[in-house]
Amino acid sequence: MKGGGVIRAAGGGAGGAGLLRTRLRLPVVLLSCSLFFLAGFFGSLLFTQDPEEADMPVPRERLLDAAWPEMPYGESGEAAPSLIPYQILSWQPRALYFPQFATSEQCENIVKTAKERLKPSTLALRKGETAESTKGIRTSSGTFLSANEDPTETLAEIEKKIARATMLPRNHGEPFNVLRYNIGQRYASHYDAFDPAQYGPQKNQRVASFLLYLTDVEEGGETMFPYENSENMDIGYDYEKCIGLKVKPRKGDGLLFYSLMVNGTIDRTSLHGSCPVIKGEKWVATKWIRDNIV
Ligand SMILES: *[C@@H]1O[C@H](CO)[C@@H](O)[C@H](O)[C@H]1NC(C)=O
Image (cartoon, rainbow, N blue to C red):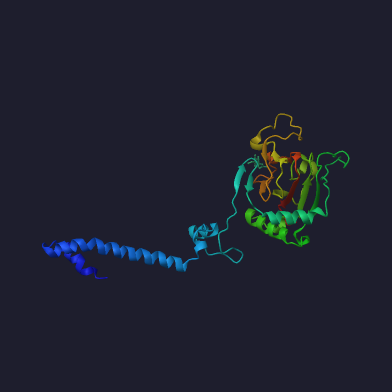
């Protein structure tokens, strides 16, 4: 570009015919330079970029990489930050919600694998209780499934993800308990941890529970925490009413809550149950996590 002379002429402020010519030329030259530059710039974009990709949003993982470059990591660590979003539902009990923890396909695989093995759910009995005396407390059907019994390997993937989200090692988890609740079926409020006063000393106590909802439920079927925030503890709650914090099942979403306080005693606010299904069918996979290797 022959820009040097033009700039000198304009900047020098010299008079006469030369100046007039320069004044006319300067905008023309600048304008045409700009046009050529812009044409070249966008032209080159067209050739270097797939036109379809140009309109795609940046994947979230890439944004995360850009915001938090990887740190040096140990043998058992991971190269990249991961994105497992969660919402704190409550501090009493400590309950976290994980939206879209599993894909639709993963949920369907688990239901399919479990369907063939369903049996009426049972209860851990307290001193003096019998199967007959506890009838009606838990009316769902279910089955225990360990990850290596699932030919689709979905349970192994979910188990690994639960371990990463909780940082509680995989081998502290019981096999999955996959449950189906039909219309009217429910689970009266209970604790997942075993109170030593009622069940005797515990060698391996349940610390936390992770529920993976495998289906949407049209109506009812919420997981309820009647004592959330220490409420309803003094009203003579009958363990069957659906009150307190209610979590509506959504296919693929996860719910994690802790049954123990940090010092290992049972968190009384972790009492929970399943409200009766009113419309639809509820499928859920539960992973109980213990304080010792299972
Ligand atoms: C354990 O922690 C809870 C909550 O912080 C507290 O109320 C309770 O007294 C503690 N129990 C023991 C045995 O330390």
